[in-house]
Image 1 (cartoon, one colour):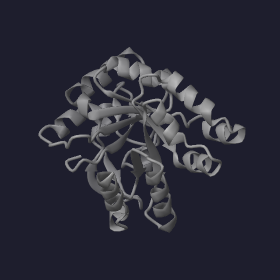
Image 2 (tube, helix red, strand yellow):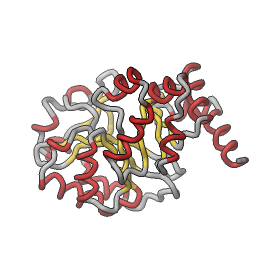
Image 3 (cartoon, rainbow, N blue to C red):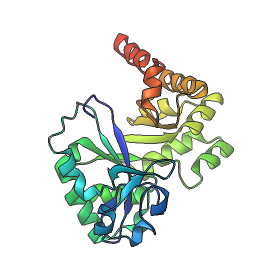
Length: 250
């Protein structure tokens, strides 16, 4: 974020109705803990360490959303960089306590954060609780990608997404949907731009030959952001620098 890159973290609700910065509900998948995140207390989670891809303990501890403000204090954040808080549950998981914790936790850095989620009702509830946060929405969940590709109703997909989350500034789109729609003559990125939404396309896992080609296609189609697990690899492939230089020349 110091150099202008946006960063995504995943959020799951823990037993004390706050939010753990974790992707997997099963703590054994990525931490030194056991059990489901929803049954783990804040104190228990703070005592855990993250594990690497081989299951070995790392020096990094599990972070709670409630602790992020103190970790970000003093960090210089470049213009345009946002911390993406990707809520991995739906509105049914939220209650008044969780919403109050969310509002308190993000208040100190809301201007530099964007909430994303695949459930429009959850987006509404969380952004109502923290009105200064930026708003994002991912309409590609619950079988939406398959249904849209099957029906070919790309215009309806765009309309529904904007209707379901009217305050969304950023729309998060699955790369398969974007590229397969493009192969059929539909430009989803341009369609959302016409609705005054920016578009993030996710997720390019590694900078292999196939992904580098996809990255180039997405840049050519005007993606505002591209989510990747391998930013260093894309920089090494020089494609990020080329895309940035192209934007400057335009």
